[in-house]
Length: 222
Image (cartoon, rainbow, N blue to C red):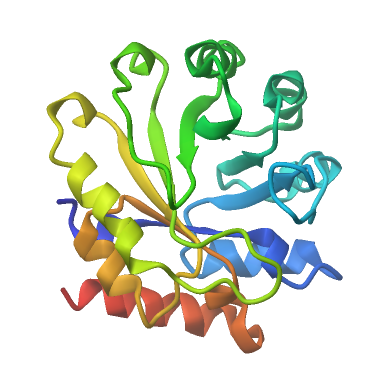
């Protein structure tokens, strides 16, 4: 398992204050965030829609942090060239939405980005050996994409714990995404996550710096 201090934190920008994203990005960077996370939804694969893709290109000049894009949509391939042009650094697509995941992952890497596969809470991790030449990371959704409050589902962490033990995944990074806060960050770290995507837990009460530090303290208490 990776040392807790090395676990990456990717704040989900859609949960932040959207009226002054320049200042928000600056505070996130200064507070120790390692990535900026963007969820792009189509309203079909998941029953919500938040940010569109234009914001990625608009924010790219304002931050040096890697942009981490999670495509929660069917037929994601058409959008991949645009994401590369806008400055995305890594892109994950849903295994459930890609009938030909190897082809989709290859397309992402051909455009110079790291490629990941995301899995809904009910989806087990299948044999992915055929994808390994293009697969850099796996995202485990730790909530259901519900409207409003999305409760953290601790049982989903078993997929990270089990996946970290599989020899074929030795070079793969594992990402936990959804419902993570200071209350469960230690549990996520114990499961072996390499990165945590956190929305409300970071932007709660507008105390970005304090919340990030509290999460780091919780992780480092292992």
